[in-house]
Each structure stands twice: as structure tokens, then as C-alpha cells.
Length: 195
Image (cartoon, rainbow, N blue to C red):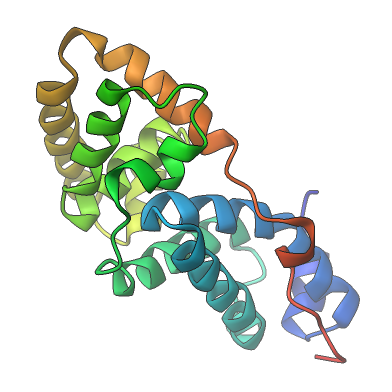
């Protein structure tokens, strides 16, 4: 669902219909990114709920001409950094559970990704799963384009050492698992009571 400037202007005024449409348009992406960054269903769910709930309080300060998707990506990343200490067990990572085949090589690949610092892991997921270019990665990560490119290069070099010649196949498997991360129907959007 596309969100235009009029819809954002209404959401800024906390009109329930507009707020609900903005939340509905962004919820799946927020949950998907939160799950992937956190690696755990429970932690990712908590991050996504926090982001969606907090966004309603922050809407009045939004610029109506800005892209809500970028705002939600940036805020999801910033919030997930605070939850980084809650790491998943290697075989129980959401990116492993959602893969068609969770073979040992793929589990090691995801584990290597999890052992990276936050920003290289974020850059890798944004580039290879969200398919963002360097500029949009930088915007989502709240850093310069050059820094985002450096984080991505470091992440790719690190996980390529683990993956070896299977790197491209493992990245495709990761992107497929990422695409299947989604919340339960009843968890998607927070209830809006007259905002």
C-alpha cells in the first residue's frame, strides 16, 4: 500500500485511519527486519512492537515529504542494537528455521553472520536481503555511505571465508529465509484507540 503526502499529513495529525494505514503499510517490513537483526522470534517481536508503538507517538514530528519506510528501517535498526545481547542459539536462529534446508554449512554461515559486530551484520542484511543500495543502507544505518560500504565489505569478506565457493548459494538461501520472516496475523499492527 502506497503512502502519499496527504496520508502522511493526516497521520501527523494522528487521525486514526491514516495512522492505521501507515502502520499496516510498514508492519511486515518492520517485523521482518527485526526478526533478522535479532535472530530470535521473541526478541524480534519485542523490537517490532516497540518500533510500531513508538512510531505513533513520533508521527506528529515527521516531515510529510519523507519516506516512512526509511524512518521505520532506521528506527528498527537502532532499537535492535539495544537488544543485541540476546543472541540466538546457532540452530535456533530465525534465519535457520525459515530456510528450506538448514544444513550444517548454512547454519555455520548464519552463525558467522551473527558473530559480526552490529553494523557489518546490518549492512549485509540490508544489502543482500532488503536489496538496498549503499545510499539507502547508509540512511537506514544512520551513517555515511562510505561507512556503510566499508561495513558491507568487511561483512562479505568475513562470511566468504566461512562459505568458500558456496557463498552465492548461501546468500540466496539467506535472502529466501529472510523473505519468509513474517509475523502472525494478530501481531502485525498495534491497536489504535482514538490515538
